[in-house]
Image 1 (cartoon, rainbow, N blue to C red):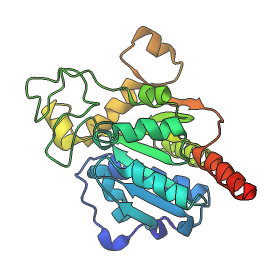
Image 2: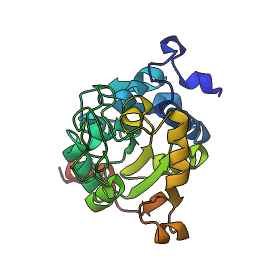
Image 3: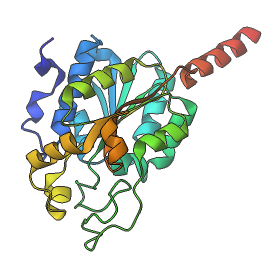
Length: 267
């Protein structure tokens, strides 16, 4: 199926800023869905609010554009009501780990069978460039003009600690790697968490004098390494990419179905 069949062309050109990594990540998601040969009518895209949450408008599947921070709550309801559907939840770093933080940890703890895709650009891009839970220490933003003093969340460690049964990280630069991770994440039965590092040249890049979208792509190439890289041992500041967790455990959907079926049989 041609890639254009997965997008709503009437909503293009898109609203993302020049150099934003979100469109590249969306393309990797489209290719992953295409590679898995998933029927379009069996795929649901659920978002909250933010730059990344433009995806439901652009992707031609069943889509919900919901409340800020509540995408996983809506996605859980869909999966519980229609367990045969493939539910994918693109979120921003603030959307997922600030107002939506509790939904994230409990969806991971319960092992809800959805795929959470967090497009992490370390900033609140849509609302003016405020710092988010993933803004690095000392980084400047609209609300931290002299430098951020809040320690940043490591979203991979957060997802691992909360019990996610699939956890991975890549970047907007490593498009093929991200595509393959998303294929595995979507195929995984249980809660899948994929962090996709994305560049925001308009706010994060400009405030921190990091240059253009191309410069941010170079940064992802130079400042990230595969899991277990020797470079990480000599430079701990490098960020690891790869699949950190991939283990089987019963999904909440399967357990719920078993309990309800058992209850019906008893009566």
